[in-house]
Image (cartoon, rainbow, N blue to C red; front, top):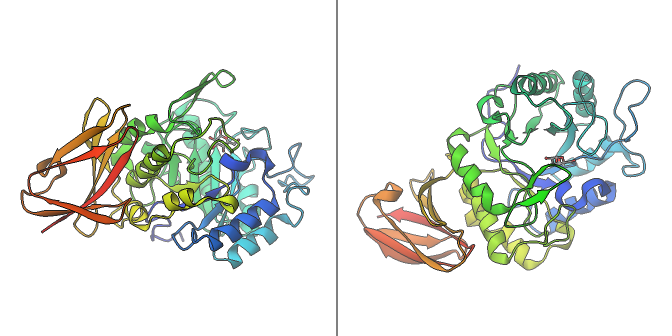
Length: 387
Ligand code: GLA
């Protein structure tokens, strides 16, 4: 019987291979990543899923029994041994497939093989499935049917899976994803390592910059919660143009805004950079415990926008300890003072303490209104405690 305990009471955290490695993922990279997640302290901060994205199987076909086969050149020890290693370090292990005949990169998908694949992954002790939607029909009814079929197959597999839907938001998975068995769903196309969107002629679509994700998160905030998280895509923090996805990288403040938004919106936090070679700036962005606590807060209420004016935005997120987090986003190209009042963030006109979460410093007291200087593309994250 399915347990009623949420599998994802707070947004899932971990690492995914795609943004850095693309099809070049292999066993050594996964083992090295697992080791580095431990050595760096990332695992201690809560990043505990290791997910292999597309391109892990033999590309040409399944075996003669119809089973997916882990590519013997990339994964010579096989997936079960890799799962055992990852588990021995205390991580959970994730894999990828697609609700059609082929994955986005042209590897075998799971359409028509849902039960067989789910049982195979269960036999490898996999804990997480990211299920993509390339090469599948565009209508919503088919998407619901295909995700439900896989959701049921996972439930029948004898093992508990966190089910991550990836149809990019076009068919409103926030309305049906939970019922299909999902715990998180992408709400947008693929993120790039940029601030602004990038036109991709081969897709006839855009790779997303971080800036536009603010609007996507703002529209969907009320649908997020325990076991039903809006997924803004894997993090690009730390890629700095070196990853597999396009874009030359963001500035430090832009990466900080990216992390702030993902934390604030209760998006899953799946690291995308090469944590084996992480610099201190990246470590600081990924491991600020006060910022992570906003994302992982037990109430699980995604932050929402309370006002905006010419690229200057104030967002609010109620927290389980009765305090309120506030995010001040400056999407514009000039530094500006961003102001808000107590009533705008749902608080009384009594004395309040303001803590800057990125700096981990108490910075001020205020009663009625507060104002803070915010640099272009910067986000200031505050925690406001009433007297
Ligand atoms: C799609 C997904 C990405 C990634 C690739 C893999 O584009 O949205 O996150 O999984 O496929 O091919």
